[in-house]
Amino acid sequence: MSGQHLDKSDLTGRVAIVTGAARGIGRATATAFAQSRADLALIDVDAGALEQVAGELKATGVRAEPFVADLARVSEIRTVFARIWDSYGRFDALANVAAIYPVAPVLEVTEEHWDAIHSLDLRGVFFCCQEALRKMFEQGSGAIVNVSSGSAYRAVQPNASAYSAAKGGIVGMSRSLALEGARHGVRVNVVAPGYTESDGIKAVVSEEDRAAHGAMLVPGRLIQPEEVAEAIVFLCSDAASGMNGSSLHVTGGDYMP
Image (cartoon, rainbow, N blue to C red; front, side):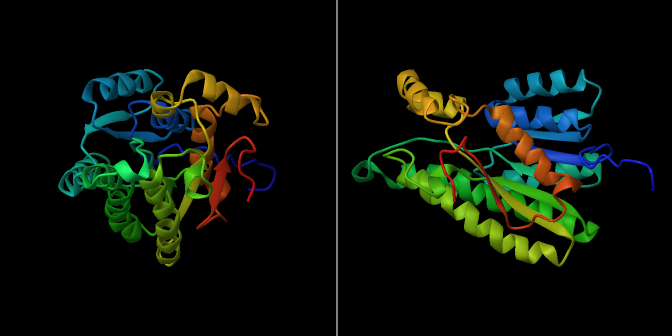
């Protein structure tokens, strides 16, 4: 209405699903959604850590329920999304954050290594999208953000060929889903973080190398999970209503397309 400012970042009354919500970028994303007053369905395989996050967010006054599932298993994806639908009755936003980040030199990549990464980082993301889109298409609304990586666009780190392939697949898949979703009022976008100060990076990159890389970025440090989370929540909000099939690069200047 004239003379009134509509806060397009306010997600009160909307249901946001966050995968990988127990730690890192997923946890930061859940917190950012809570700050925008969304109701939260939190998915992770780590039941204990997930319960803790849900409890902390409930204490802020939002609805936040934990749903334990292994998203590398399609049967569990279908089951957990059905449970969330039964509990909430709508899907307004989905942030696909869950991923693993094992590394191996190309000559040491086994079928098991490849399949472990792709079953969660790519296949799992697709089938989470599929289950969310079943309901979003019926609603005629919704927004999905799939988390890719700077590794999809440039060789950030050696020994990450399987991971890079999965994250590159997310970009192409998301653009295709964005075309299909547009006919149903649903937007699909990508956030591609650079080196982020998260458990995944800490497990495979030394503190010295992280500090050296961060020193080259515009902030003079690595990207923080909260900075990636803000981009995800923005793309799920009405403030990003004109964005579909886009990729936001949260890299601190490490990658400039």
